[in-house]
Picture 1 (tube, rainbow, N blue to C red):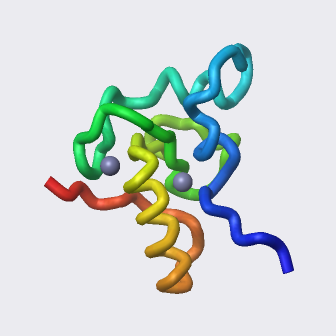
Picture 2: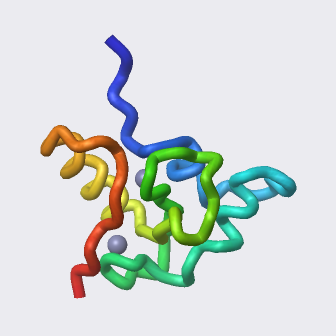
Length: 92
Ligand SMILES: [Zn+2]
Ligand SMILES: [Zn+2]
């Protein structure tokens, strides 16, 4: 068995990494919002890919989530047996 992946992609998990210019990650990070789209937190932000495809960085495929919401959303989706996809609804 493979270890269960916490995030839909490395881009999701590593979106706070610096100095990866010219990569998908860089583009995704630039498209990131200043706060979590689910809870409004402004620290520890990730970029979540709605379709789970890390190279798909169209703004319509990206959602900014803080690490807490990102974990929660992936756990929720996997618990429900859903594919790693979908937008987390706002909590506020
Ligand atoms: Zn959040
Ligand atoms: Zn994700």
